[in-house]
Amino acid sequence: MASGAGTILFKVLVFSAIAAVSVAQTPPRFNCSSTSKCHSLIDYIPPNATTIAAVQSLFQVKHLLSFLGANNLPTNTPSSFPLPASRKIKIPFNCNCVNGTGLSDKRPIYKVKSGDSLDKIAEVTFARLVTFQQIASANGLPDPSKIELGQELWIPLPCSCDEVDGNRVVHYGHLVETGSTVSAIAGRFNVSEETILKLNGIADARTLQASQVLDIPLRACSSAIREDSLDFPFLLSNDTYDYTANNCVLCQCDAAKNWILDCKPSQLKASSMKLSNWSSCPAMACEGNNFLLGNSTSSGCDSTTCAYAGFSKQTIFTNISTLNTCPWPEDNGNGASRMGSQGLNLAYLVAFTHVLAFGLLLIQ
Image (cartoon, rainbow, N blue to C red; front, side, top):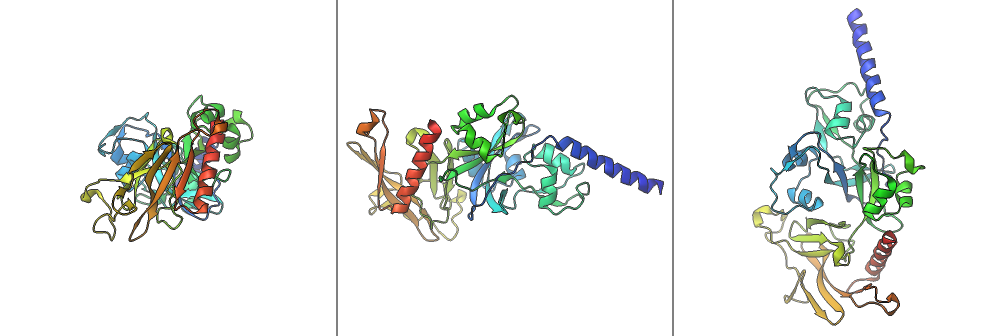
């Protein structure tokens, strides 16, 4: 009897301690009502020195190239590349909306190790990206103090696929650093303070906490990708790249290039590619075989590019895009540019206009 009572008391004390430690942490929750899945980013600070391979395995990032692209690391960076404990890195993952909340799409799955507790997994292993309560809820655990060695737990990372002010964005889970402010974060990512406060349900900017995960909407490079493409919406934020179309296409987002998605054949070796049912990469050309994906020509103010427009199970789509780099008369010489696209339907032009308008608002 005494032993049983002691065990019950111990469990109560452990659960109380877990609750006390976590009560100050604002549970990360991103609103998400979109009906489609998307790619998201989230910060991670390893608790100990590690390697890219170890972090990639922990978060089950399937492709090394996607990890490298999210962090703008050279494509030849090895998976054995060391990561110090203090280095903040970005984790790419798939997001899905569930009951108005954005959660990582059933990944990552963590296998319980010796010495683990639910709180340790949340606080240490996953660096406060989730709370122990969220892990317990996602996995249907009635008693958070009861987990078993080898048990597999879904870690529900916060994310979103929603548009912001009518524009598609890359939702980024930013881990707040000690001493940071909403104003500083807004300036760093060219987002208004009002937008950050609204998205994250913060009534008073002064209540911001270190290690809090904020939903930051990053402007995405505009593109001509079709809605029926298997990778739609393919969104990349500034200084990131990724491979698509079964790794046949490499796309980059660079604000210095007018915020237009820059895509070209990947040139990867066949052994590095996930060609699905393709024995080789399909043709990637506009107007026959003389104007290939990524090729550009210039005439006066107009720069014409063979742009990536998505892919299907059999085909890689391309589109002729024209960028006018001459300033409008009313621009007073500020260098604002115009874009036209042959073959784009009205929906794509409207989408681009929305993205451009959103970007201009962020810059103000």
